[in-house]
Length: 90
View 1 (cartoon, one colour):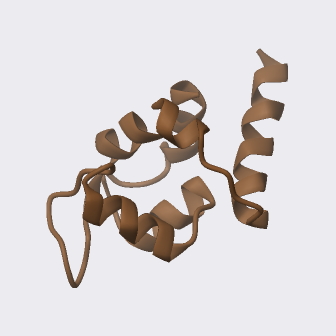
View 2: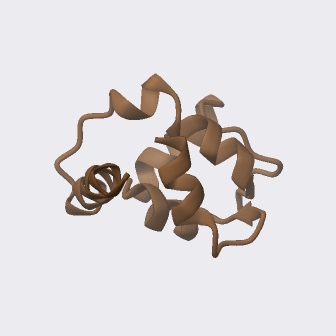
């Protein structure tokens, strides 16, 4: 899963903002903020503006915790669908 997200993130800078993380993961802002506040996704700055090095996000999306998320969010489901389609191309 990490390789898939490395490709997805390739056109983003080395440091990501909350809206960029939302686009990449398909998670809503509240869920991402909870993950940032709990330390599950590490960041280099915090409130009012979180900045997350891309390597920290890649570590999180490759973890079992990301795969265990249950969400009916269309954006989250789209992110997972993109991964499934990517796997078929390998």
